[in-house]
Length: 477
Ligand SMILES: Cc1cc2nc3c(=O)[nH]c(=O)nc-3n(C[C@H](O)[C@H](O)[C@H](O)COP(=O)(O)OP(=O)(O)OC[C@H]3O[C@@H](n4cnc5c(N)ncnc54)[C@H](O)[C@@H]3O)c2cc1C
Image (cartoon, rainbow, N blue to C red; front, top):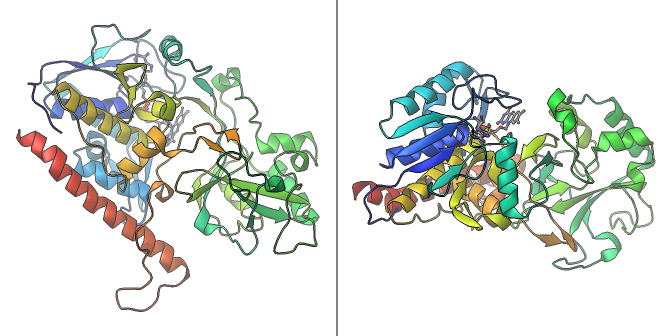
């Protein structure tokens, strides 16, 4: 962080959720005065139950805490190194959960609240921000989350030219490409169509026989689904994103005439037999490490999803970077609307953080709050902060939000979808490990484990270097 001005200007943070609380903390710790605005309890969201900052609206889990083998565990480790308040409060309020970091939700939120309230540079101000922040707030971090109140959501929409900010987002599962069995699946675009940005072989195709299709449709119909909450029933479906099980309910053959159409494709492993149905997966990130299941948005519960989708030939051992789901969400088309420091291009005094930016999950939201706070602090000091390396979990997630998606492939404009942190977002290793420390060759799953461990080690080393070069220098100044 470089800077010449003395810390004088106040930064306003809107929303004391996971991201806003962390952003306010980072700003205050960097010597910047903060007003943290929170509408609860005056106005509640459909999911929050308390007035406490950083309330966990659903599960009490921060997921895996394994920094060596799991991308979210790595993100935990990086946030701890960056002095995260959310991680400090989580660590102090752990409950037993195997390898996961789960917390006593009330103790966790109370710890965040008392740290914020005790900080001399933070004022927690209750009240809804009901429109665009006033012009005299020259630096604002908006972290109002997936349930942003309507007047503010409307005001933001007015600035962005987007048709909608809140809708049921179509979340289809995303698979790690290296877990797809290419001895059964193959690359091909329908009718070998090249299209802008394509090669004619852009999709991974998984073939099904009639028996496999029949069993698959039956499993979809029988699989346990999540229920819509009452308030969710008033929000429209995003155009063209009917869940697959809803399509299956409309008729046994509906999917075969929709996303599972077996036309324009030839199975090179068995060219004389025409598949009865085909599941297609499309590249999901620039790196080509992740593929999403085309048209497979679903309300099936996570367990049945994994079980049913692994019956698809080629996906028997699939590892999912994200499972499917449909819920109301408010998020920006960030790659288009935000610059690389999370500022709204149309009005750079407004910076965004948390789930609104297109990350998914408590930890991810808090981490984007953390980096937004650091960016805003650097700016308030009259300087700027170099981006965290893309090889770190924080940098990889930020890269996804501010540009890692692909805009067009096979001629269709792609929409930006929220994402959990996962190793598919990281740039590949220069050299993938092939041998164990004792010199013997890695086999099968050992290679995947060694790759994740090498990505994690690289991330932590690069983060430490970035902290030393860009943050310690600022702290000492
Ligand atoms: C129903 C539901 C269930 C979820 N379950 C999980 C889960 O189990 N695990 C998981 O990891 N993630 C879950 N998520 C995602 C979760 O919301 C995010 O992971 C995380 O809470 C987002 O953090 P945030 O800081 O962006 O938003 P939030 O934590 O929601 O914080 C936003 C804050 O802004 C306030 N606010 C909103 N509008 C205004 C306004 N106009 N003025 C002032 N304040 C305002 C809100 O009251 C809130 O305190 C769930 C989301 C929803 C909607």
